[in-house]
Length: 222
Image (cartoon, rainbow, N blue to C red):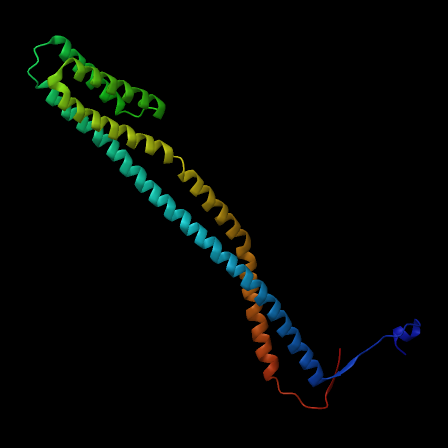
């Protein structure tokens, strides 16, 4: 008598034909394969979306960095051109020490504007330069054309600087988006790897069980 019978408990033992048991095993592997594949499809869709977001963030940051470099170079170039065009004012036949002093003051301001100033301070200095140039053209009529050329370059430089300051910190947002996407990618990657491993394992098991030759009539207890 079994221990179960001695204790007064009835042990329910289900007996299956080997073919029936095999079918249950195969169904189990197929069911798990279906569940894992469904979950894997969802994760792979998410991975694709995250990788796309990372790639786009990198692209936008590269484009922004390129634009920043171009604007920085343009700003310096315009100020340099303004300085060179001041030579035309120096060459004017004006025998006036006050005129020459005003030119020197403007050149000093342009030289200072070229340095790395806070945007607000540079804007204030550029406005001051433009005012001084306008006053110069008003006082010396033969300086008008040359003054207008210098003013155009100062305006170009100031515009480049303002655009530069408006976008200079926007690459931080791209870095944040990229970092967040990479973090999420790292969190779901292990699950993706595990699912791939389990799917391969169940596929191999399924191939094994489906090819397993069975003798009809054999019984297995389960």
